Length: 102
Image (cartoon, rainbow, N blue to C red; front, side, top):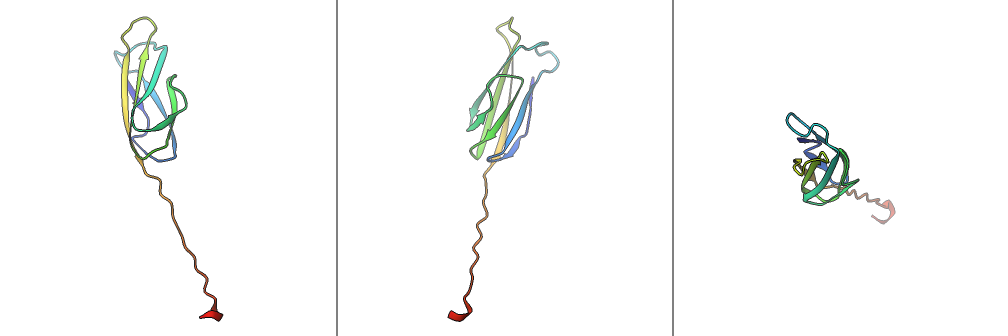
């Protein structure tokens, strides 16, 4: 199993992550469980094959997912690490000069 999604994102942005079954993984996963292992973000859900993640804090986000078929206790698992780039703001300062007070 693998996770498709960005490995780099801007703080404040939202992205979609999808669990992808491959080769010898579960042929028909019925359940998916997502969790944040490291970092801070908002998940649209902790269930489902795809979720949206909003990156609330700059740094490293480690996102994990497990998939189960509802029959066996063993499931497939995968994770992805995303580097969250700090938000930047541009501060501009405009000064007006009064020609009469020069």
